[in-house]
Length: 235
Image 1 (cartoon, rainbow, N blue to C red):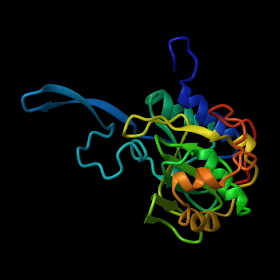
Image 2: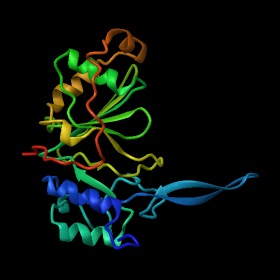
Image 3: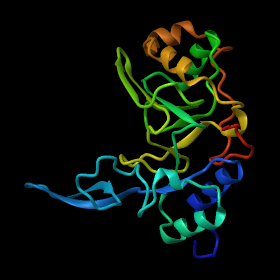
Image 4: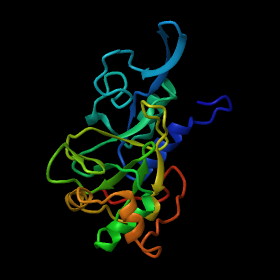
């Protein structure tokens, strides 16, 4: 809880997601550590709050003995987690109800959404996950985890059992915060994950996008807040 007795920002977000029917859990997060560089004194860096220097998924795995199967909409359980660790990030598992396609690309997100719209593909909920990283929440793809390097970046797909999606406001291991680019409340039903993944594999470079997407197509809805105000169908 905060000094005024209010829930932390991440607990408030977790409660909002849970009220919208999205099961969530508390995830580890980045913490500052001091690393000594030869001849340069000490410098700050970030590491996973789990304390393991060899953490395979830094700042992206459940706290304590919690697993993805423990994701819940129970407000009492959520309060217990975030009262214990107020800085924990808010995560939901990729699974039967929700998938994620992450694109790393230099183009502005409105051009990417416009390019998809010109091909009849709706983007759906969209999270900014650091500079150049755009996470599209989708209906689960037919596969699980998939990663492809492409000419202008990379495309990652998370399906059933594919890992955690860090929901805003969560902090990534590089120190960036996740935020909504297209909020849940403005996004409508989740788009088809397989179709979106295949389309993004063919996404051209930033210069070509800028010359081919008209302003009317590059229409990203209002950014909105960091928590949802209406439910998304995850059934």
